[in-house]
Length: 46
Image (tube, rainbow, N blue to C red):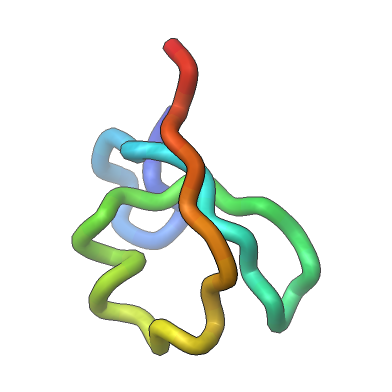
C-alpha cells in the first residue's frame, strides 16, 4: 500500500479522527500532520 498523502510506501494505517476512517500513511507524513488528527497507527500486515 502507499501513503495517501505523499505516495511513498505506507508503514501502516492511521485513524483519521476528522474523517472517521482508517488511512494508509508513511510515518513521516503522520508525524508531519497535526498529531491530534490521528488516534492510532497500526502496522500493515504484508
